[in-house]
Length: 321
Image (cartoon, rainbow, N blue to C red; front, side, top):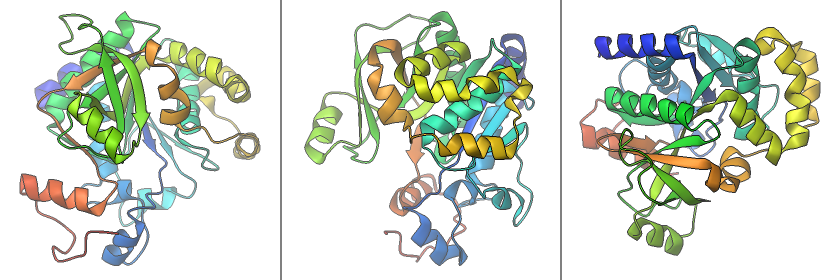
């Protein structure tokens, strides 16, 4: 694994890959169960469900392996600094950006992207949600490198990494692939016919039977190309962020950023951006990678039991909320 990560770091340095980690979620669906376990509410990305590291720290390891420790930007939610320091200081290298308010995953991504592009206008971006389980990391990183390469080759496209479904899940986003394989260099890569977020039971069953894929929300794209794409869809929102591109590192006064956020609508990355641009998207299915969104206690428990992991929460704890 160390050799793999060293190789990816060298690749990242030569290609200027940046990792953008989204850690602004509040985890409301998991909150009752986590409160019962820990005695307090804590967003799930700041929890260590197995072992000693939190979900955010596991994500950070993948981010550093893909981009290097100096090219990681993490977007956190308002008031999340306390979770980075309690009960111990978490491993979060690079730059941490706190949102003054929650305006949806689309706005959170745009804020992080503004910081990166102000520093490096030619950046290749790998977006990583901080609260998903991935196994194995080395296999996942192979696909992440391929996704970034493909996004660089198809500069106007965004690449979505997808998981092979094992059930008709109604709480995930689905991707319907289309067309032939894009290139033999990227096995399984295809165009996108459409995306559907959290379908009903009948539609989820149909998509499962039709060979559709789960959207992991792991994305790769050219930074400037995605900024322009976002601007086409939400010109007023991007216009509010444009001044940040003129400030190195996107560093702005906290009060000014709070004032900016008060004017913004909520923009959901999946619903308001990705679902609207299937023709500009490619999908790269992962093989041999176990991926799970731990947004429900029962999903977490199922993964832990499947892999025989040692759980930090009481085994007898009620896992449904």
